[in-house]
Image (tube, helix red, strand yellow):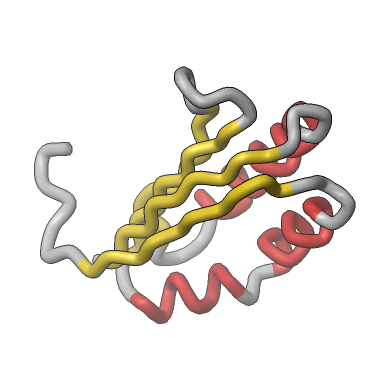
Length: 99
């Protein structure tokens, strides 16, 4: 299994604009073959930050996601929005466990 965890901080003036983009991406990604979990959440401590958590069956499913029309639409929607910082890490895990 592939686990992807990330954090994206947006300029305060752009944070509200990213929320519908993220919601659409979540809904569409959940339909993908190999998607176990895909979620954005607003950080409760750090303002203007979204936390990302993804779990994929395998690398092939993640690669297909990165080529999907909805990820391309999300990326296009981000153009013009100011990202202050972004950190995304990929992990290979043996099981999801009881988390």
